[in-house]
Image (cartoon, rainbow, N blue to C red):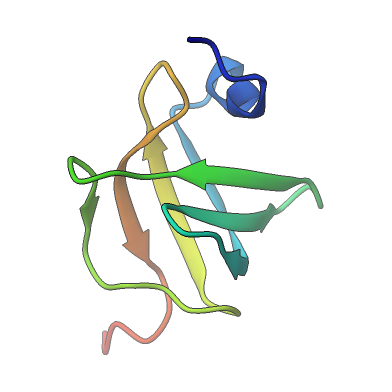
Amino acid sequence: QKRSELSIGELPSSSVVGQVLALEGAAYLIRDNHGRELRIPHDENTRIDRPAHVGNHIQSWLDHHGRAVLIRNLDGDGR
């Protein structure tokens, strides 16, 4: 089944950075640096370093279906 909401997977970049706008069950809704709102779906195979909350900035690496393989919280990592 092809899902139209996964059009982000067609982007040439393998990762996206953005600010979390909302948590939607098994997805983060983010606004990227270009002002686009993107839905980043994740599942039990996605590696998440620390759960992100609304307002946090994340970087997400995507597979060719647009599903997150790795999500890294860029805020408050203590470094």
